[in-house]
Image (cartoon, rainbow, N blue to C red; front, side):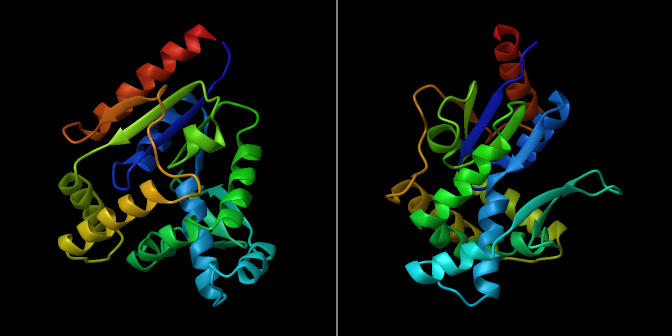
Length: 227
C-alpha cells in the first residue's frame, strides 16, 4: 500500500500541530512541524539582533540558521533544535508568537524554509502542518486538510497550552494576537493562508481532540487505499 503526503493548513490555535503529530503517529508517518521552523527562525533572528525585513540582514541570518527535529527518548515527543540547541519551550512563548508573522512575510526566508520542507517530505509518508502547505509546499499533496475553529475556542486552547508550559497570559491578549495573526497570514503577498479548492475543511470548534484526529485519519486511510 503506497504512502501519501498529508498537508494540514489552517488558522493559529486550531490544534494543527498536535493533531498532525497524532495522525502521523497512528499512520507511522514522519511529522514535519513547519510552524516550529518559522518560530525557530524568529528566535534566531531575535537572538542575533537581526531584522528579517532588511534584505541584507535576512541573508545574514539565513547563513547561520540550522533547524532540525529530534525525538526525546524519555517522552517520545518530537522537539525542535536551533543550531544544535533544544528550543522547544522557547519558541512557544508569546514573545515569539508576537513576532513570527512578521518574519513569515519575508519572501527570501519563506523560500528557504519551503525548500527545506520540500526536501524533508520528498519521500512521502509525511504529515506536515502550517499555513501554505497545500498551496505552496506540497501543492500536489494526496490529502489536503484545512482546519478551522472560532476565535474564542482557539484562544482558550492556546491559553491552556501556555499554562501547561508555566506561562500565564490573559485570554484577551491571546485573542488579539490570534486575530492579528489571522489578518497578517491571510493578507500577506507571499504565500497567504488560504483554503485550496481540493482541501477538506475540518471545523474543530465542537470536536474533541480525539474526534478531530480520528476524522483526519479516516480521510487519510481512504486516500491510502486508493493509492
